[in-house]
Amino acid sequence: MVSNAPSNLLIHGDNLKFLAKLPDESVQLIYIDPPFNTGRVQKRGDQVTRRSESGNRVGFKGQRYETIKTTVLSYDDEFADYWSFLEPRLEQAWRLLGETGTLYLHLDYREAHYAKVLLDALFGRECFLNEIIWAYDYGAKSKTRWPAKHDTILVYVKDPKAYFFDSKSVDREPYMAPGLVTEAKAKLGKLPTDVWWHTIVSPTGKEKTGYPTQKPKGILRRIIQASSKPGDLVLDFFGGSGTTGVVAAELGRRFILVDKNPESIQVITKRLSDAKIAFELQVQSN
Image 1 (tube, helix red, strand yellow):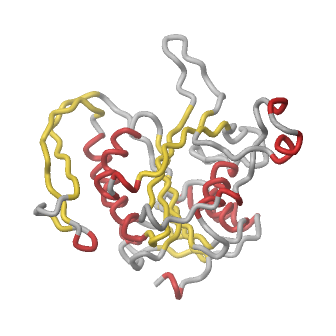
Image 2 (cartoon, one colour):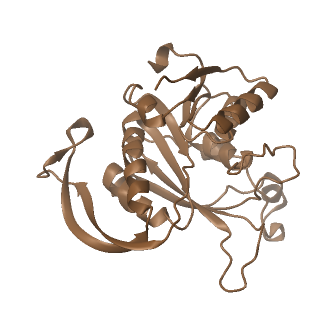
Image 3 (spheres, rainbow, N blue to C red):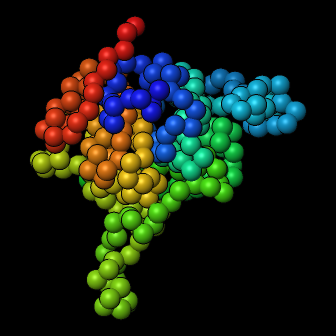
């Protein structure tokens, strides 16, 4: 049970197996940055489900779902395996979120649209809060198409009438045209919109851990400030480089990080230890 667990946990093991052990509605904020899916194009049938009072599939809390159609789509050859992997973990995310809780799902342009259809079915379309665009300008520039320089973060809440969102606690950013606002407003800065201009982690900066998918602290800081309070529990079950845990601890939140990659666990352990953040490492048995 989370209530009896140490303040901060790092779990080395399969995230689905661990998530199933956590109690319902025990987490305030979930941020995940799962592996992106790429591959060759194939064709295959697919089924789409949605909530329905007359559906024959019963989900969490008695919610019913129905299959509404079967289609043949052209998609990556890893698509079916990818979503059969990710869907049960997103179902667990829905179960674990408390009434005021929020999910942030971080993807790139290849999968964001598929994810939104799936999350609309799992959470309900009324629970969709935002599509955040994280824009950056670094790396190679394609000369055969518009260079892809953004990620997508889909934001879903557990209850659209009860979710927690604190815009006052979010770090403000400079006005792009400070001369068009009063001096006081320019000094205060403006609240971020759903488009976040933020550089990637510098390859030579102090924040760099060497982990290939590391996300900048500034992105996680904004998410955690907005959708949780001090003392709340933050969960990241694709722990990666551990940025979620580091920022959560700095902001006075508790965290659980999960990853099965030994390299990730090694990076996170060193990073938390170097930052003098107390945590307990638990290794799952097979």
